[in-house]
Image 1 (spheres, one colour):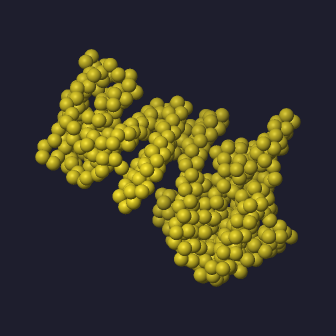
Image 2 (cartoon, rainbow, N blue to C red):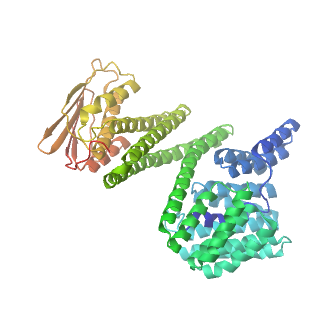
Image 3 (cartoon, one colour):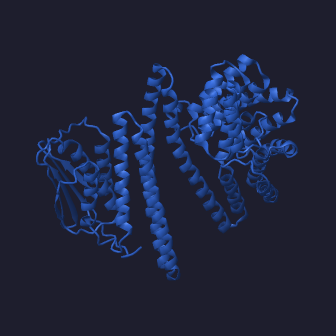
Length: 577
């Protein structure tokens, strides 16, 4: 198990630290300092205070606020040309964008830092930029940037490794000439971090050198990183006693220090899981791994919220600049929003899949041991409550985001995503608020679902016609059917009902042998399909039909008649799971 987050942090530590040890100030104290500079109308002091405030917010785990203050400092320093202060902001922003795995933007900030440092000919700034680029290139060599299209065709691992080694060699040459031994310790620690999994025998002396310096001079964050890396290296060599000693040292630092970054607890749990697995303590390894995954999932949710907030901050910031920059920022914002929307859709489907898997796991446990059935029921209730809360939170965020958008196309896309989330939330309640999971059929949720969509578009006076047979459904069939109905009714509200003196909507379902048939009709102008017809709604419908292993057809104009046929699954479940 590779602790990627820890190792990347080790590789980028020289650049991020820059002899800037974590300030003892709290966020409130840093904000008070900034307010004083505003009163004095001292622009440079405001930039320094904003930079410090950004660091304190990031150390506290509030990456959204941290990035906002760092960008504020960046706007001030960039207008004044090359400076040591500008280099510090660039390096901090590298660590910020890596929090959401944005390697292209990270490289952009790192190369800007290198160009700034060369113009200054400032030794410490050059060392920071070189070590930062060394860490980024090593991340590419380890495959961390391979998912970004910018790196297609540039996945030569050897070339990336050579670049990382070259940049760290330049940084080490400069660090050896600086009076503070901590600078060289940081470089050695980073070089050791690169070798933790690949050549732990060579990594240990490098990391030990760094740890000896950090134990004397701090900071606590570097002591934690070095001890964790040494624990992993010793574990890889099966030197479990030495690894255990370093893990205990990490816990001792945790008990005394308040200057540890928010991502470290998950890394510590992963390291303990690795050690317990190597020691043969499988139960303890599982518990630590489960806790680490929970911490990492929490960080992912924070990162998702930070991404949406960063887009909003970028829009508001660029809006204050000249017209050309505003137009460029708007184009970039639209592209990023489409990417965020796509990631959110896949994440929602992933959450649903996880929910189904967890529910199945609880079912099997209840069959194996009847004694814990009551406890499992309580756990299911809590899980469903949190899942519904998460869906409502996502829907709320999408609603807030749509209210802030000026572009009609982007706003409509976000609102439609919100309807899809509400559809899944409604279906989730229907699935888990009844004890007749298998026997419930389309009549149990179609009318409520359609009514909620009509109300959303202001067509609550329309009375759809229903002919619905009570066909039993499995949850993995109900979800795709609900999403299909959502897309079709939304399409009718947008194109069939406006300017229609007598809008109608009919829904029917019936069973023939072992097949389920679903038909949805409206009296709008209809739509003409061609081989080149595209659209996310039609793509989503086709994707859900494929999941049902069924077939569908859409009639020619006038009107839209959608027909779906799919097999009814014979899988049997208990009445209550």
